[in-house]
Length: 217
Ligand SMILES: NC(=O)c1ccc[n+]([C@@H]2O[C@H](COP(=O)([O-])OP(=O)(O)OC[C@H]3O[C@@H](n4cnc5c(N)ncnc54)[C@H](OP(=O)(O)O)[C@@H]3O)[C@@H](O)[C@H]2O)c1
Image (cartoon, rainbow, N blue to C red; front, side, top):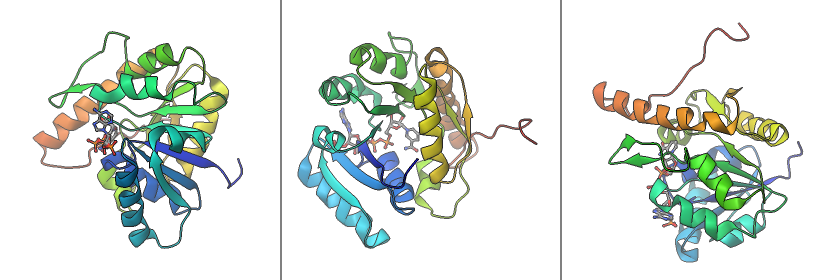
């Protein structure tokens, strides 16, 4: 994959989105920070540039951010997920959607009517673009610290080629990836984050994450 890819982050002003932007922009990926509010997106970009210096990063409203990108990461709370994905319809043909959303209610995971956030996005987009689930179990706290080791990323989806491209991108932020199977597996990977949130509370941590052992050793 060439270095000139552009990745839009829908909800890029938030915890996960801005931390992911830091990790992507550092090695030279062009990042579009998306927000429901253009001014908020530009403010987030200014803050990121203070940390990163002269990097390729811009801020726009979500739809415009996605228009200019090959990949669109969805990084909004679950309550905004369906509306945001509906808003992207007609805008993502030829692109790959990366869904990082975890269905949570008061910090607890639940399985939404579609079966998972990923299946919900697929249903809304009706094949306009492949949807790949990834980054659910990664910690924004770790992403934010440039040298912090990251947890492993379980990647699922039904489009094998899109899944491969997403795994290549995730390698750029310094994480190992594992093909975690088809879209039907997404509810497990999404739900695992609910367990990580519990572990953080129980063990007074902020960045519990997942490590796979027994493969490639
Ligand atoms: N934080 C983590 O460590 C982490 C790790 C893995 C996965 N995730 C998942 O990633 C997603 C984002 O998490 P986060 O912690 O970054 O969330 P967040 O900071 O609360 O929100 C992210 C951004 O989403 C937008 N947003 C908020 N409510 C919205 C709504 N109702 N509709 C549309 N957009 C809305 C806001 O951007 P604007 O106001 O600028 O539009 C906000 O800055 C969640 O689904 C979470 O479960 C988080």
